[in-house]
Length: 122
Image 1 (cartoon, helix red, strand yellow):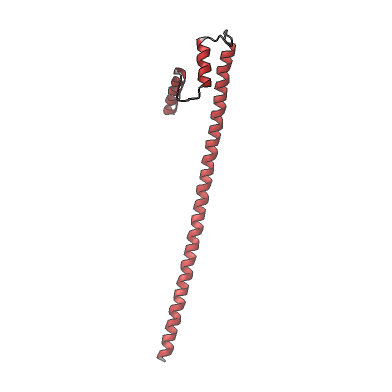
Image 2 (cartoon, helix red, strand yellow):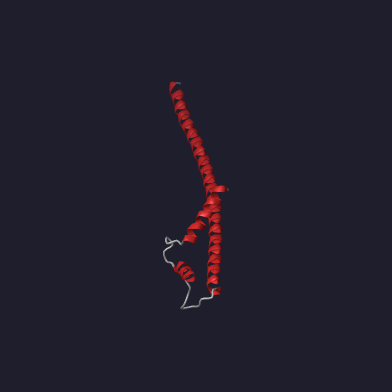
């Protein structure tokens, strides 16, 4: 009789361990599903951020093209001519051709200050 009781206890222990393992595996799987859902939300948010940055960059490029076109039209409408540009047109051409964006003209510095003020006021 004692042997039967011990065998039943061993089987119960094994069964309870198996059940615990099943429960633990279920918890691990549930956590994995939650982690995947969280990652999906993060990726969706990052996609929205990337799309927003892309839109803003495109708008900035369009604005830069507009400004460049405006400066070139100012040069074209000036009374000076190619090969004999006035000082103002020559400065504008140098700014447009500048390979070093660090070199900013006074007008660019003033424009940047105005933009900063506007952004701070919002």
